[in-house]
Structure formats: C-alpha cells, structure tokens
Image 1 (cartoon, rainbow, N blue to C red):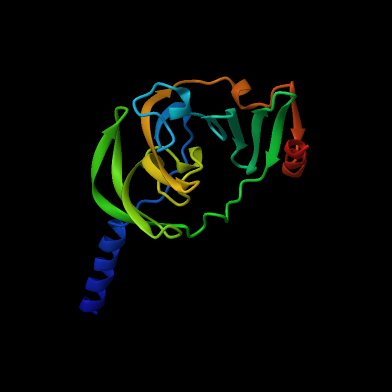
Image 2: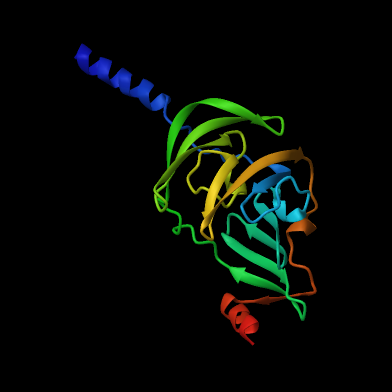
Length: 210
C-alpha cells in the first residue's frame, strides 16, 4: 500500500512539472513582431519586416505587410469566423474564411525546456518545439500569462508565442516580439469597413483569375 502511495505521489510531481495548460484570460492591446526571413532586407525598418497584432477580449486582428500590399486578418475567436481584408486595386474585398482548427492538429509537439529569455520587457519561457512535417526540432519561447488564442501560430502551445519559427513557402521565418502595449482598443479595428465587399474564397479565386 505504501509503495502504491509512493508511485501515486511521484506521478503527481511528474505531471506537475509537465507543460502548463494554456490560460483563457482575456487580453487587450497591441503587439508588434519583427520577421526575420531570407526574403526580407536585414536591419531594415520596412513594414514588410513586421507583423502587428491587435487583441481585444474575443477579437483578433493581424496586419501583415506583403510585397503585393497590406493584408488584414480579423477573427471572432468564439465563433471561429474570420475574414481577410485586401485592396485589389479595382475593389476592396473581405474574404470569408473559417479557420481550419484541424489543419495543424498534431503538427507540433511540445516539450518542457528549462530557462527563459526576456523580449519586449516580458519573460518568455523556453519550450522545445518539433515540427513533425519538417522533421525539425528547435527551442522557441512563449509567455504563459497571455492566451495563445491571440496567435494563429503553433497550435497547442501553452501560451502566447513570443519568439518562434514557421516554415512557409520553402523557407523558415522567425518571429520575435519587439513591443507590447496593454491598452484599450476601439472595436472598430475589428470590423469590416463599409467600402469592402464580402466575398467567398471561391469568388476571390475567380476574381483574380479574370
């Protein structure tokens, strides 16, 4: 009986040292990430080297700056409903999309790693991340005090990704938090402007093929 209690206590300690669960507290504010990519100009202040994230309770907005223009991703988190806003020149569109929560299911494996770093004034804990599709393992960083729901990267990570790498278009992109502002945001930031036409993904594909 004593031996069984010992093993039970040992398992409790073991599980207590495992990865913490992702929190669900709401966050409101602005986060800016730098993007290190072979396609970007090193040490440049060009907007293409940055990603801007706005979070307000259950709403998320991500501004990306690409060679073909600015793209805005807005998402209603509980409803899992999202739109991509683009200016195509001849018209402005809001492309309807339903985030595929199953797409990255099992793609990433996480393992506790001791140590931490500080980015943008906040503590970011080390975590070992394996990209199973690329068969690559590397050390990344996350903050457990901000929910991962305010990021579209690394499905399953137990906190907001702070410094991380993603494989996209045959190259690795490294994102690093460079500033964070906790402040009230206007709900208008997360709406679809009146001059944007709401279209489906199929309609968008037809539009650019014309």
